[in-house]
Image (tube, rainbow, N blue to C red; front, top):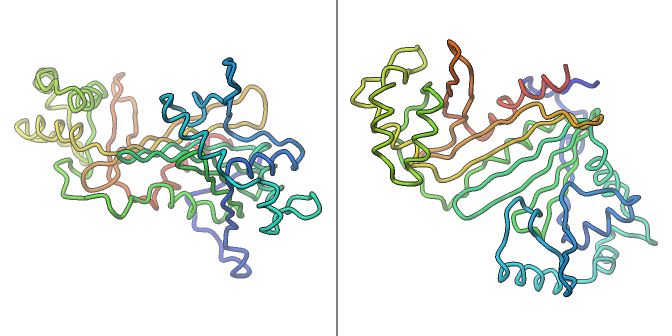
Length: 311
């Protein structure tokens, strides 16, 4: 199995064009037509036919979340209003004499037959982006969408993968950022971290106060020193209250059956930026390391998980 190292800087490309990913924006009907003409390659998501009599497709599993009927109808109306996919692909030079552009066909083929698979889900406030990264040997293909109508299809050499992963966590420019009350590093019991998130979502600060009193000396900094007990309730409340986004990456080996799911990386977006969450065991108990990260660090954060796939 080919080893892919995301933690080592890529060698310089032989030419400028070798380093540049190719990107194409495709509507859902265009993408489906490309997949059909590329030998019926399956896409990494489903648009299910419904059981109802109207013949409208069900969107229940399309983006991992259920939509209301009004949203379904708006989505269907938007898709129905799109240009004929064959006509638009021909006009753009991506379909010639019924044959799909070689790059497009190869990218869709790679999406269907990879060795490694990364399923990425990013939510920032009301915006959700789904992305699928598929790698095999020295090539990577990615597909991403924020609305299920327009997709970005890209393909590039594996040397460019770290830079592409760095695009995933870029925070929207119009998102208000401020100083966080959560330190750049802390390590704490899992139940405390879970309670902090629950308290932020439900307002149950009383539960958090009880757990904090029991485990305050177990919230430690990067040197293993406990935070002052008086500070712990505030920083835990901030951990739940400041959350305004999440990033989740599922890493799997899909080269054989059954698919081997290797691991998950999760980030949370706080007031001043992203924090990576690393569960680990200490003295027989599950703890969580929470560390500030930049979007460009996603590849390095994923490197140990991907190394497990290749081992």
